[in-house]
Length: 300
Image 1: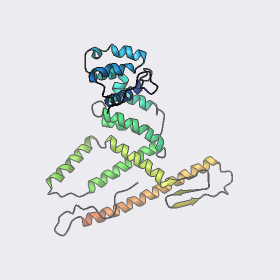
Image 2: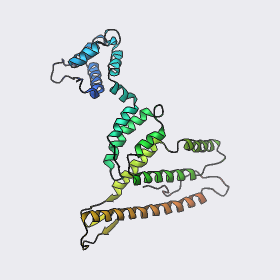
Image 3: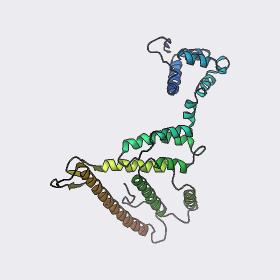
Image 4: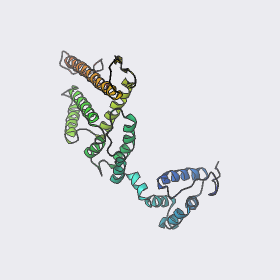
């Protein structure tokens, strides 16, 4: 059963405003769905589409060659190509990526700024996916992302990536398994050319930011704060200590505790890795491919 398509002057009718070209794709999708439900015949689709556009758009669209001669699909493609910004947003362009990054000029996003970090990642990830590798190198994409983060955050990202890489390379493989050996060799060669992929860097950044938010809750306006299961009590008797100094103290304590936690995790990982390597080979010298029973990967 078909539905009745609204007239152009109806209050609930779709409408395209030439002053808002960014809404073109949404308008076209809406019209496609509407005409499909209304079972609009192919020869009437172009006229129906044009009728919902404003005056300027209507004149421009009707002047396109595919309006007189061409299928509805060709007409829609010509309309999209008529708006370079819309066309480029679908294909991806360096200029769009640069405009996006301008919004974050002079920013220094920290690990605690999870909302701002995601505001950067969401659109950038979409553009980079369209650009790499044809128009943008993986290395350049990573550099453009990291330059918007503060130095401490960047250092933590590299440290986490390096640690994950070490752990990956320590997982034993059966040297008699040609497929496994070839896969490990290819992995190492790939890493020489592109040490880390953009998506890997993004994943680690998100994980660190999420972990920072989940693990630690601070109240800088109070005399106490919590970090995991620990609780530190600040002395309220310190005279002449400004609110800013108290915040600085809390940040320093926070960093100290983070370093202690990381050191504990690293030592635990090292011990479990050694134990795993000792038990990975049985009495006949055959490699066990089972993972260790305990969680030896660092979960930051």
